[in-house]
Amino acid sequence: MNIHVDGPPASGVGRIKKAFKSAGVSLSDPADFRILCVKHPFDWLASFFDCVLFDLVEEDSRWSRLLLHANTSTSFSEFVEKYLKDDCTCVAKVFDSYTSDSVMRIEDFPWNVDEFLHGIGHPHSVLNFPGLATYSRCTYDELKRDVVRKECELCERFDYYG
Image (cartoon, rainbow, N blue to C red; front, side, top):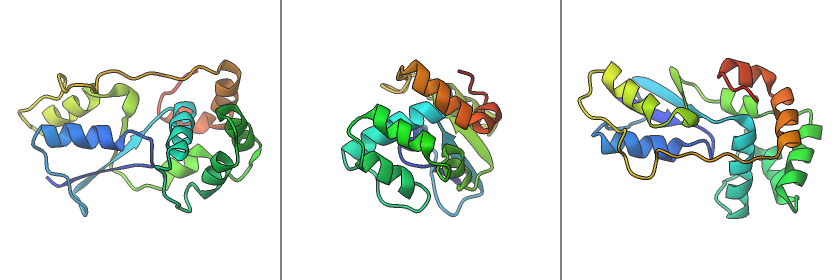
């Protein structure tokens, strides 16, 4: 089975690709099966902002307004405030711009990859893959609550609460 893993920058694509490769699964595009990596919208904004600070995000129409907001902000809080005021910017639109057969939440890593591998009859496990079993979250309670309100449909679709 040819598998393709995709998603926007800072969504966990690299982690999931490394896990599949470590299990001996070849990844390709085009593929028979496409997996989209998703991340809680607030946490994704935090990771996206960090990636922009280190110049790791390439220009793309799917996140060009977010890139503009990040590049013109002096702090993460300012970036989120600009995003919240922008009616044209939505994290859900970024994730929805990808075509997929399945979705993997980075918060469920590595268990989701392991379950997928077992589901396709692959004999390897990735549960002991070094350095990938932990995931930390940012805590800006008020900003996070506002992002969840703006992205309520995305949060409900992928079971993100709070």
